[in-house]
Structure formats: structure tokens, C-alpha cells
Amino acid sequence: MGEQIVDKIICIVPSRVEEKDFNIYFTDKRIVGEFLGGRGLAFLGGGVVGERIAGKRHEKKGEELMGEKRTVDQILTINEKNFFIDYEEIVSAKVKKKECMMMLAEKKQQVPNFGKRVFFKYGKGNKDKFASILMKVIPDKVVIK
Image 1 (spheres, rainbow, N blue to C red):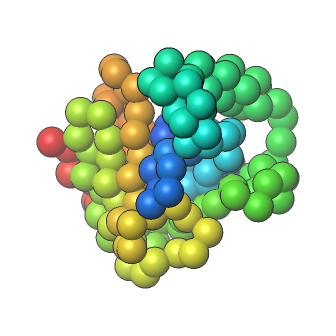
Image 2 (cartoon, helix red, strand yellow; image 1 turned 135 degrees about the vertical axis):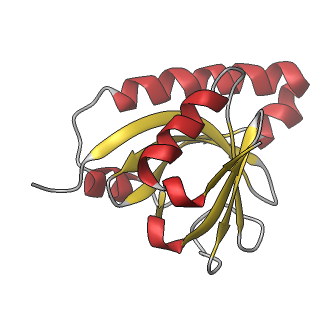
């Protein structure tokens, strides 16, 4: 049997240029990010309202994609902005109220990040879900604040 998806959640992954929406899949081996869309142009075109509209559109698209039957390899090859992080590459994960910061052993080029740090922003009320997922897959590396 191939790689199995343990759980999934929609998150914003900020980069140095803009915030991007991703479906985040937690498998038995790694984290997989599926690109849904960026928020930069929406913010420039419509301010906060434009950014919220883009976020809602990306959320709907994300839910539709999560419902499709696909393998992890299919997800990774659909878009060049999709990424993965092997659990062995994660040094630590700090879960806070609205975001999680992961420290990686080395910087990964395809992952939107700030050096060796990767941020995952989640909506209100999703802290417990995000923390619960991480406790399933990397319990020895998680700190909950």
C-alpha cells in the first residue's frame, strides 16, 4: 500500500512576496502543500475585501480538491508550486493561536519560507485541529503555546 493521507487542513502559507492559500495534507511520511492561489493581487485590486473574497474562493476550491480521490504523487505533480516537507526535515513545530512555525534542518527551495522557517496560518478555531494533527505525525517535535 502506498503513502496514506492521515489528515488535511486549508492554510495560508506566507512567503516574502505574498500570502498563498494551500491545502495541507499530512501523510504518514510528510507534509504536502497543494497550491490553491495567491492573495497579493486580490489585496492590491480590492484591499482587505478583495483579499477576503480571494480567500473564500480558494477555500471553496480547496474543499473541492480535498474531496477528489488522488494519490500524493498526483497532488505533487499537478502544480509546480505544490511542495512537500519530509517529517525528518522538521526540527520543531511551535503551534500558536493563529499560526504554526516550523523550523527545518535546511532551507527548501520550493517551500514558501523565511530561511529555515515555514509558517502555516489557519483560521480561528483551527489551532486545536492543527495541533492534534501534528501530535499524530510528529509528537516529539511539537510545542503548543
